[in-house]
Image 1 (tube, one colour):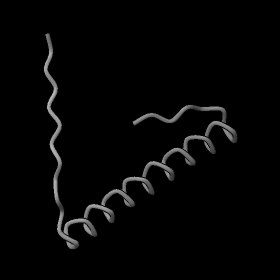
Image 2 (cartoon, helix red, strand yellow; image 1 turned 180 degrees about the vertical axis):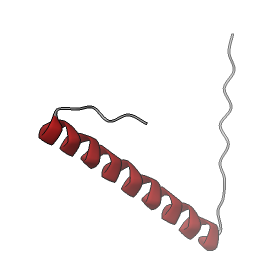
Image 3 (cartoon, rainbow, N blue to C red; image 1 turned 30 degrees about the horizontal axis):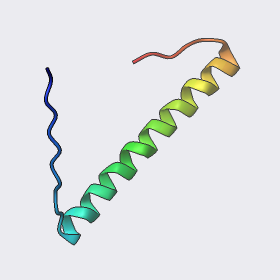
Length: 50
């Protein structure tokens, strides 16, 4: 039997702002990378990897 635990964290406003900025950067990098992979496949027919 597996047990799961849930923890709630209470962030200060400063911590919340920093976390939101980091998540925004991750989202931006993911979307830019996805767009570049799509563009490479459409233009050259090749798949980009890491």
